[in-house]
Length: 608
Image 1 (cartoon, helix red, strand yellow):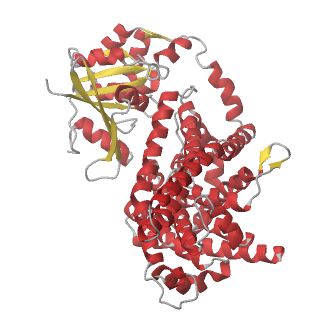
Image 2 (cartoon, one colour; image 1 turned 135 degrees about the vertical axis):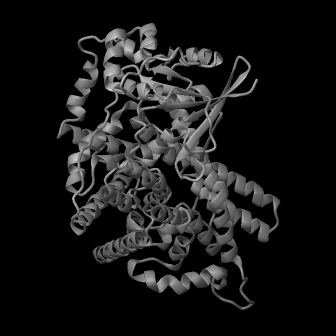
Image 3 (cartoon, one colour; image 1 turned 90 degrees about the horizontal axis):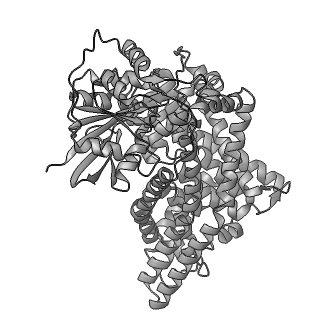
């Protein structure tokens, strides 16, 4: 029996991705659609001996696409473009608690006349709210099979699996009339759905606080503050465990090898470089756990709504919030997510400020320097000082986003259309299984980077820092004679006014490919510069070699610097303009150098 290919399609916030996770579990892969950079998720499962291949299409509100993501969904549903996927069946996922909105898209898909069924998701939430849905009557109104699902429950997709085993063939055709899908939705709701008088009392009570102009902003600030406190407070034991494991492995390996090139490569290159980067995985995962949980609860669209007025005053829009929040993971998908912004001026402004958000690749640098130079102590008896500094760095990035967007608004007087229409999904508890899958995906991405580009660049930097060997009679450190040492000393005068030594300059160069490489680069350079250096001692070496003013300058540099080739390439791809790309690189470098200069010179004067 040949595999059945299905495509999950539906509005954003329908629980479509949660249902995809429920069906496929760990049997997933992520790639891009052929010819475009929009991400696609595929997976499969086996039911009654039949393999079912599942494609999770980008969320869409209509087949009248207003963004590249929606265009992908439209083209696959219509079959007008070959992206290498040809689903046998469309599975339209709708939110049972929000049928008035979600059924309109279901009727639009139904009018295509293609094999289809409807997965009525979040049936448990509908039951709790007292929403009574007659599945048979709704099925009759839609003209396709309707099956109940609860994506967050262990057996919540069994009815869907049984329906797929039957092929999901459509019922006899229905008269779609003049195509007025809104009228069709009204008829279906009247025939099949009984709504209680108050279906969202909890949502309304929460929204009275979380969407309040004052208390809502305070709540958002508290949430972000607690998130950054947790990054330090919760991660420390796991980091200590990773550090101890890497140190033990390094010691065991070194004991088995004689002194020489191979031992230097393993100890000074791989263990010193990669081991230092790996220590920051727990902090990255804790940060992402918060972001994923906020997304699962339905809070993020509300935060976008809450910040819309402030962001509009600065030249952005509430629609910029989700792409900018995505940029805290990585600016590349954040910039790509600006495709959902319809106004060209707002989209361009969001693209230009997205690199200022503090992506997860900066976190290892922040954590290293904060741990080395900021004492671990309590403030007011409650708050971790290191967490406060991390919060201040993230806040600096946020303020920079608003400030730069405001300047761009002054430079570009072109008016933008400001109409923020957002669906506010019901509040719900995060599903631990979906959180686990999301964190595992993030861990895999990080570990692939560690085992790929970071390992490659670390080994390359070790080679450049080791060769050529100094001639007999050379009195300085051996690394000074190497290719890397010469390059670092050559560029050092350019960065001397902002307090950077040649080791910092050298670490910045491979850091252009991946910011985390700056940490492994520093670890490798200092391990080769100091014969007494050991695994896990990088923070102590930096504290002994740098002044506090230098550390603050480096932290400031990383708030602004355009240190990511992938981000620069994405700006070029999304804007199609070298002029815009050049402007982005120039202004980010100018901000980084200017503010680092101000911080270093001021701190040096105050600490003198």
